[in-house]
Image (tube, rainbow, N blue to C red):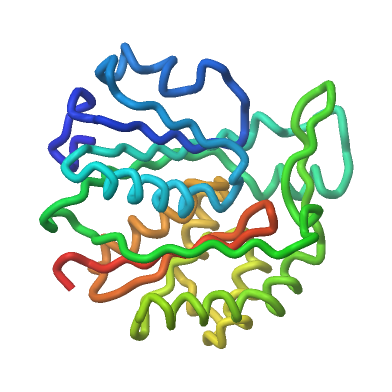
Length: 258
């Protein structure tokens, strides 16, 4: 939080997003004394959002911030995907997931009030397609988590993503927004470009993050966002991620100096 000038003692709400492990007490409770969080800080652990957790976590954090203007909301997104590597199994899905997924963490600070930060958070939307529970997620057996990843995912994205995205862009009144997408994998990025009529190779930042870090699940889209901000985002943007459900999470952003 050094970049924001806010200390742990200033935080009023901690939203912790993770789907690669289960712990009770949850992560923020375990690290609170070392981090310096106040005993009165509200704890909001979020489990089960998978790759969509970065966007859904920011959305939840923004809503909590708006509910109590002036309060500091810290959103922490952490995934340790390598904990789910199953050496006791050798299925194709296990091999692919071990090669694709990595570990990562990212955080953001949100506060409702006069615009002073780098970004303004706007409208949000979520769309869950019925009867798609088997596209991606975890199954839990006596040994631990094991990945559930359907080969139909890229084709599904090609066919189904455009409609909810177009509805959201229209409802949020976004004019030519910069697209910032969760890079679920190379084939998924290809599918997003097809679905949204983008020129092949448009999602360069997403591919760079995927190449350098792998798919870290929920934090990955925030790595892409950071990269876009460093290059100087101007005007409106749309943050998007797909996750278990099967669900698309969409969030409107605007550069404060745009």
